[in-house]
Amino acid sequence: MRSNRLFDYKQVLRFGLVGVLNTATGYSIILVALWLGWGDIAANMTGYAFGLVVSFFLNSQWTFAKAEYKQASLVVRYILAFLFAYAANLVTVIVIRSMDVLDGWAIHLIGIIIYTALFYLASVYFVFSKSPARSDNETRALSLQNGSR
Image 1 (cartoon, rainbow, N blue to C red):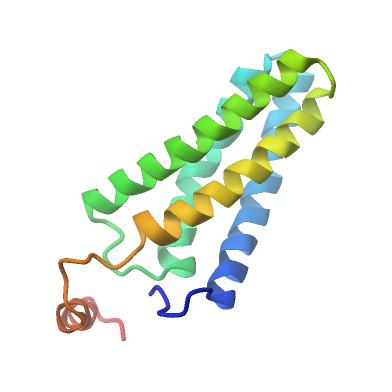
Image 2: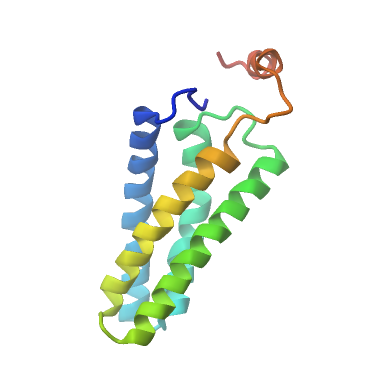
């Protein structure tokens, strides 16, 4: 569940650990795709597409501990947050590539940093935030119905 604290260190740590696993896997896929001769965009999309599914399940169940992770609205918000962060990543990759100052691996690493920061903020404040329409009592009742405390 989202903490009431402005900055939840445990949540950031969990998000970071999921991100490290995701980044290592996704970045490896990007590098292999680049090595196979794929273009930057195709390699980038492939790496991020794989990570989207994995990160949703890990973040919804562990990082943000949302019992109602199967709700369609949560999935839609997650995809929207992903698209926002991914668009920033893709713009970064395209702009830096057009400047012709860095190699592909470094360009994607910068894109990953931008993506991660934006996706975390979107996850905290948009995807997994408490619904303003729900009272604390309603949230607690839902948690009890779903077997969590």
